[in-house]
Image (cartoon, rainbow, N blue to C red; front, side, top):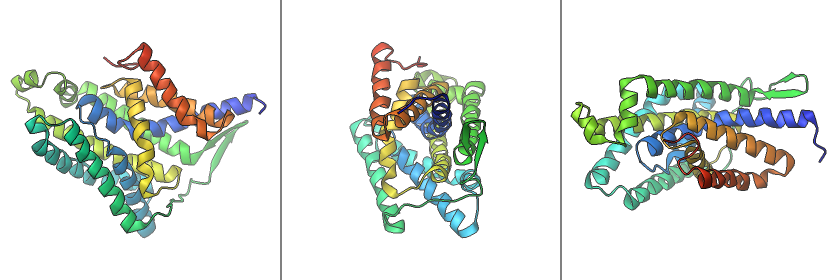
Length: 291
């Protein structure tokens, strides 16, 4: 394949736009795993669930998936509260939040997948919005709106979370809860309540990311498995406990996958992504922006 300037620039733009989506799907893991030490491997299942909720709203009401996601995000927040309370009383309260809790989240992952299969079958579903088939062209660079719109909304959401966690008392409490819950308790803050609300917020972000997903590509119930390794790779690469790091990790993997898919084929993309992760951990085990 001949490498030209327009091919390079378009691959770079596609990678940056893809990185916005990757940041949205990973920020919830950055909160749950990076800040709370809760290994929620079922997170991608909630992303797929959010995609199907957006699909139903679009089919029945003609609603835009992204608008639907933000309107229904309180429902995902409540779902997160329920799941964390079960997790806490069954595992964390007894100090058994390692292998047993991992099995718990695996169970949620497969139960969600089976429910979606029984409800919708295994066929792929896609939402066609007013901007799905529109592409802006600036010179020789293409900007497909099905990627531009999720990128813009994801960037706003991720930056909003970053400022929320770094500029508010609750946000700082979340950052502190995994480091020293006793000190937090001495300040009059209930660590369990902080973790509960933060975990619920992570599930709410998964519902919003699901709307981005169904705008970008078709979905089917088992698609969440594809994202398990990806979201943890981005979180670890960027640095645990850092939303800014999650954005940086998403940018690196998004651009790397775009260039790899453009010049070598899509099948090489996962290998390059995880190769970058291993290289980063070899030289900086805490991740790029980890503490």
